[in-house]
Length: 203
Length: 252
Image 1 (cartoon, each protein chain N blue to C red):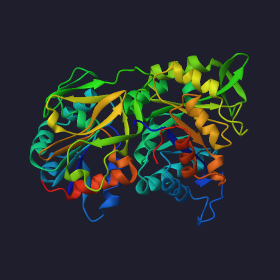
Image 2 (cartoon, rainbow over the protein chains, first blue to last red):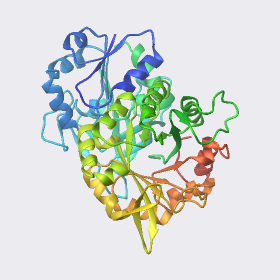
Image 3 (cartoon, each protein chain N blue to C red):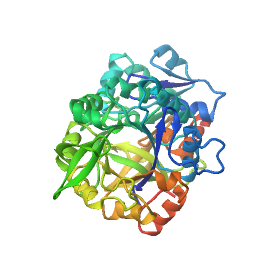
């Protein structure tokens, strides 16, 4: 069973729809119930909006620890703010991230006329080989919408990058965790392929 | 290479049916929004916008059913506009599977609505649509399909909407809309330079060069068109090839 963690921020419908579309035979649930989350085989940790709000809502529902636990134990896919929350701090506001990865979340600088948010389809360059990238070409385009990006201290976790004004981290991978800044559930075929790879990923 | 410019086909929906453009000969039911959305997705549309023009409130919930079925089968961003009046309207559309909600007249009646919904649901899902018309040497915001002036300066209004939390602006030239004379690139450029958020150019597309001009001259981040795609004059794929061949970065 795949648990899509719901902490009241944003629309999880698309993520759920995408899993039902690619793997109707696999049960996927949108849940904020720690019992279901701990029972699930795979965890999807999405997020929209502002990271500080996401962290606060997560805490309000008492989900901080269970998310941290699942991030150390089973296939775990972070999406968008679900990637950013795995880090220490964000320029977006004064809250502690989950601190699973060392590093911070920074805002794009508005130079060279780049628009913020970074919105649309950008090329993602694969920096390492990973089962989640299987059957997806490097430089394939994925759909992004965000104003902040992660800056990791340990560059070995970086598995995908993209260019926007400057090169930034678009995906990180470490043991059972794979987390992306873009939205695979909105990225047409390559996105669906990534989600399929997640379903069959054995850690 | 970096971020691609987007091509967004727009579907006008009335009481659950697509009302413009029925020229897809290979579709069994060309008025079916789900069929058309699928077709556009296959052709490579970067997003799809649904504009609900349903007048009768009895039929207004039909758009929710449409979004729900499209979102189950098509995995690109979906924007919905038309008749969005309250935070509850926004919530219901998002829950049905829309990714972005476009607000037009309601923002003029109550600008605080933009602040409220963007702080509640995130700026990333709030698009403010601005219908502008040239009056003298500047552009004013109009309502009622370009018939009623609000007296608001379009550039100032655009800035204010972004300050209140709009994550993207859809700029329609009411002078050009329906004329096939091309976007008002001067208007697009003025607003694009004035705000930090992405701009979608709309109104007036008659050929593929107009799409290129919207990006290269107007500084648009995305281009929206309805009739050139609906009536089968061009496919989305042809539009993308053309833009690509004219130095616009595109997702092919």
